[in-house]
Length: 418
Image (cartoon, rainbow, N blue to C red; front, side, top):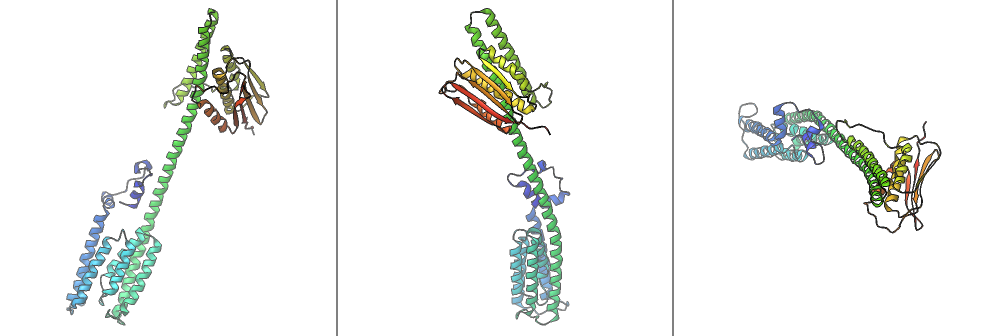
């Protein structure tokens, strides 16, 4: 498996299909990338064949083709060295630095005065270090190879100290080592560059998915908050009006109450359709304006029809920011809904909205609160209220004042037009 494919297989990274990367060219190249051990085994087998033929040529045929004196110990050491370096070539992809060190030590111990296996193994291993490790490790390996090649002809058991063959061996091995090193650096840098691009693409895809998840979570929270405001307000008004219609014996009053129930239900249904229409993929649902500050008087009047003594007081110029208008509407709606649901025989329910230019202050107070009364809801209304105000950069205080007064007090900053 290639480095690019390994990056795509790590936990937490998108798949290759998610990154929309082009397919690597060539069926054979893809097969080799998926089966590295097969490729390494074939390369090691080819190296073993060439190295054994070279050893036989040196010790049996002779360098000039006229035969050579057979030294059994040197021949055995050469064969063992060929086997060791073959193993090094086989594991070059996984432990290239260690394999190069083993090969250099083996070449020093089993040095051949006529030239040997290390002429082939050194460029292969230096290429592997440059590709699978780093350029720095490759140059250090080249330096170690050069030092080993220089001192080998002067070893007592080399048999080539001070001869021209020893110097020719130094030049030949150094040249081949440099050739393998430069090719490895070129290919290794390209592989690392491609791997960095793939990793960057995976990081961008992961960040894209995370941003989408955060946006979806935020949108779900917003929709849930709006749905709570719609359902809680409408059902509270409908329940209050229905109980009043059932309790009264005046048919005209009951009819008026039920008409108000029907109107509240229709309004709630319209708002519900608008919110659910946002979730439709085709966007075919009809859109309607969001509630704003101008709809607050009608909102207060709706609660007055339920018998709640609500009174609205506004001070200052009209609010122009649509987001602040929606927030003010929802704050008043939540405050009146809680007053209708929890207060007991209130004599006043005051709603005051003050626009000071730089901020808007909203107060909803009622004197029918029972401080220690258990809640019949889930508390999501106040949580949504705090989230809404925090989103606008304001602050809100909800709680009792004294024994009978409950107050919702919010302050929202206003973004001034340039």
